[in-house]
Length: 149
Image 1: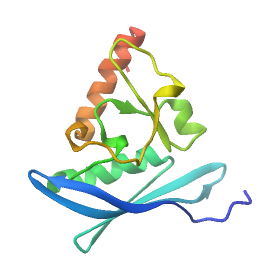
Image 2 (image 1 turned 30 degrees about the horizontal axis):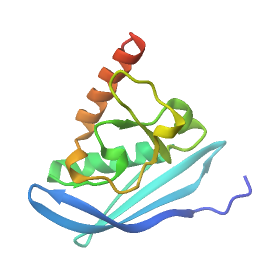
Image 3 (image 1 turned 45 degrees about the vertical axis):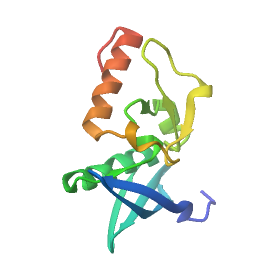
Image 4 (image 1 turned 180 degrees about the vertical axis):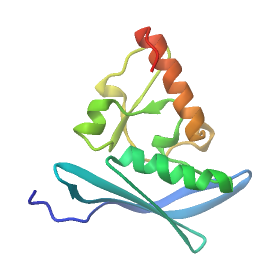
């Protein structure tokens, strides 16, 4: 691959919350390089002097791993990839690195019009835990396909 790595994909302030407490934190998303043909993505969150970091084969999975670090401390990050009703398809993960995800509606399939940026801002009221997001996605999948994940 001829790409220069690491390559910064995202660098901005995001809202994080713990109960009624609200803070701004610095979020950075990176394409770190390649493990053979597979890309490696990293997310960093700087909050109150602490640095949280997570790496995975796609940006969405990096976000999931970051959220799992924050959740035991009660923190939630207000980005599209942490909403109950968003999840990437296999193709968006494999071909697009999980940079974009689908907004899913009960009783409807996904469409390109329903794609949003994984790390874009989201309303805090829509943010859930990783377990709640995965459970909702499994319910949506079963309703949409008639098959269990």
